[in-house]
Length: 320
Image (tube, rainbow, N blue to C red; front, side, top):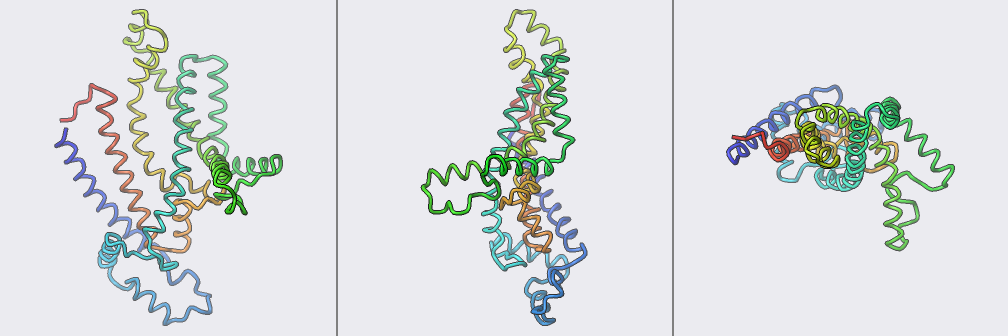
C-alpha cells in the first residue's frame, strides 16, 4: 500500500511540472500581452511599456520566464501585472469567498441526488420516476444563467430583498447575528442555482447505476434471505454501485477553481472563478498561471484520493 502511495505521489508531481510547463507556454504564446491591454490610454507612454516588459521579464526567452515565475511563486514574491499586488494573498482571499459557495452547492448536490436517483431506480416506470426524469432533463436543458436571471427578478420583485453580492449594503454596522443571517441569505441563491444542474446530472447517474446493480444475483439472494428492503438497497446494492461515484468525487476539488464562474459573475460574488475570468480579460499572466497551477494540483490530488478510496469502497480491489 505505502509503495503504491509514494509511487503515485511521485508520478503526480512529475505530471504537475509537465502541466505547468505546457500551461505556461500556451498562455505566453497566445495573442496579446499585458502592455497591450489598453493601448489607447494617453498615460501609457512607450517608455512605460518598456519598463513593464523589463519588470516582468516579458522580453526574456520562455524558459527563463518560466523559471522566474516558479521562483517568485515558491518564494511568495509573485505579483500581479494588473495592480502589482502579491498573487498568492489575492488568490487566498478569493478562495475563502468561493469555499462556502462550493461546500454548500456540493452538499446540496450529493444530499439530494442520491435519494432521488435511488428511489427512481427502485420505482422504475412509476409516476415518481417519470416526473424526476422530466425535471432532470428540463434542468439540464435550460441554461443556468437564464434560470438564475429569472430567479433574481422573481426574488427582487416579489420578496423585495437583495440577492447580489456577498452582503447587503449598509449591513456593515449591524449586529453580528444580523450580519450572519444576511451572509447566509446571500449564499443560498448562488449555491442553489449552481447546484441544480449537478443534481439533475448526478441523480441520473445514480439511477442508471442502481438499475444495473439491483438486477444482480447477489441482490436477489439478499432479498431471498429475508433481509428488509433498506438493508438490501443501502448495504448490498448501493455499496456496489458507489465505485463510479468515487471517481466523480475526486473531481470535486477542481470545482473550487472554476466550478461557479458563471454564477459568480451573475450574482457578483467575489470568488476565485471570477478572479480568473477578470485575469484572462486583463491578460494578467501571473494570476492566470497560478490559478491554473492550483487547479492542476487539485485535480491530481482529487484523483489520488479517488485511487485510495477505491480500496475502501470495494474490498475486491487490492493495491499492490
